[in-house]
Image (cartoon, rainbow, N blue to C red; front, side):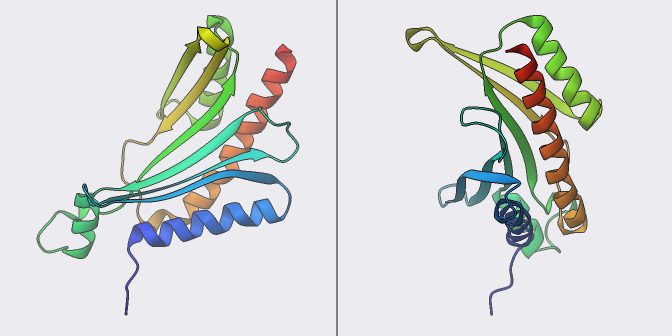
Length: 177
């Protein structure tokens, strides 16, 4: 019988928690990707969602988990590889449009630091497409360690923090309008 990997188990927990929120009407899942890269023997899973109370084109959150070959091998062959390599990486992203002002970008960073703390890697990028007058903002949060099944409860709690982040960012952007 198939024994699910840590990646599979974490994916199911994340997916279940998010779809429960979608069914409850708190969020709307807008995209979902479940990718197996056969060339690199890696897997990734991501889900994009918006708060259900927001309008289309507002803040979108993305939660991504990824397991590379070394992570899978460390789990399946624990005697030959370090247990420190078993698990998944997690990346969170929040997308919105229209901000280039440095003071506003700093305020957005402050919102993220207030929620996620100063120890997280928080990156903002602004992409400008002049031909269609589009300004696309992306804020990424990366964790500098692997997550494994021992942190399963933390994954569900992380979704609550993502919703709080989405709410506060959306509120700030509405105040700017």
